[in-house]
Image (cartoon, rainbow, N blue to C red; front, side, top):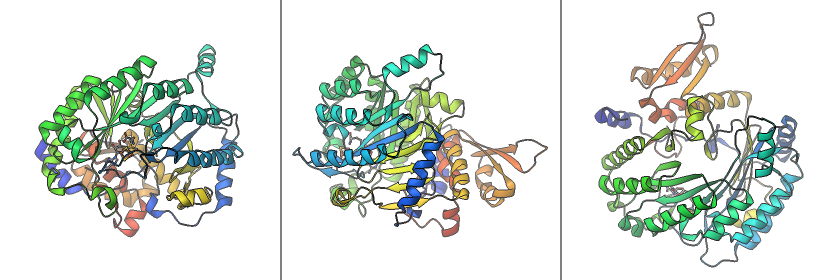
Length: 469
Ligand SMILES: C[S@@+](CC[C@H](N)C(=O)[O-])C[C@H]1O[C@@H](n2cnc3c(N)ncnc32)[C@H](O)[C@@H]1O
Ligand code: SF4
């Protein structure tokens, strides 16, 4: 993968600055504070008229203990009971959407994220899923069998949940499987004991291996592992050992996150991280390169940014056929779905209208129907979003030079560096250009895509994003 490591390091020095991840466009810093309920409900009505499948997201913010590196929006409570009121409020919000969304439409993608969704008990999970099934059109094993019998070419629905191996039992897994989840994503981060102690997250290889074995025995066929590089006490050798252990368990997908250490934003937890124990930038890059090479040697494809999938996984296949897409949950084989998101800080994306729910628990309890941030995309935003999504997901886009000549000019350094190729789409239409990101260029897809971000070029890159690598 990295035939020339020195050159890769030079490119990182040049392009490794902070850039958005483009799970949305316009990106969140551009959104407004004022919530226009009428515009939002108009978008929900338009979504209904499309009759298309959609995505449903539920945020469960609770965790039993605080991992010191964590940058997620969490509520820490070792004592259970706190979740009861939250589930009631979630149900009210779900009821609101159920009154707006045609039940004949189907949920092609569902995700529960957090926090830790398996903070809820198996009974609470089943109860919440039953509540959802009674109000929204979920795919079930029976409806899949019907489609198969009718010979319908069916892109399997993805019902995924983030689970923390430390608080997930066999009963949880059984409840999840029986209520319809087909994908699990586990927080692993690192198997090294010293690193685990420093980040306040102890979980042994044996514990994780046993949980995955149970999940597979129950019937789950798609498991993702989250890993983080850049954590305290990590060395190239220690992380190689972690990657070897991951390989032994053999998950279908892997997210290899760059540790976002921003104590100014996450002071409560990250103040416990002693920066002198973190690998320096050079070592961090070596850890990343070595992990990428090993994962690719083990048969994973690099999908983009920080995601890997086995060569026969749906994500890899979709990318090869250029049908991969990207949304708030990351990469997905389900393109162009509207997203209805419930819970603390959750972000809905309906017909190009973004609504982020309140970030504070009390505000959410007071009224879920207000917005931390809100944005109605313009036609120009939507066109740019499409180009950015294609570049990020499929390493490919077609642009019209009559509209994007300045952007094309801005791409020049990437073309000269061999990170991007271009050609005319058709000689009868010389203003249409095909852009194709090269193998090395894929590590800089965010930078390439940012040339189409009208807000960055207008205002300059003054905002806080995580570094590309
Ligand atoms: C909601 S958690 C996953 C589910 C569950 N709470 C757990 O930790 O097992 C989402 C993931 O975000 C990643 N993450 C959290 N904080 C991060 C940070 N500061 N930098 C990079 N990745 C981070 C971790 O890999 C974590 O597994
Ligand atoms: S990493 Fe997961 S378990 Fe740890 S605090 Fe963050 S959300 Fe909670």
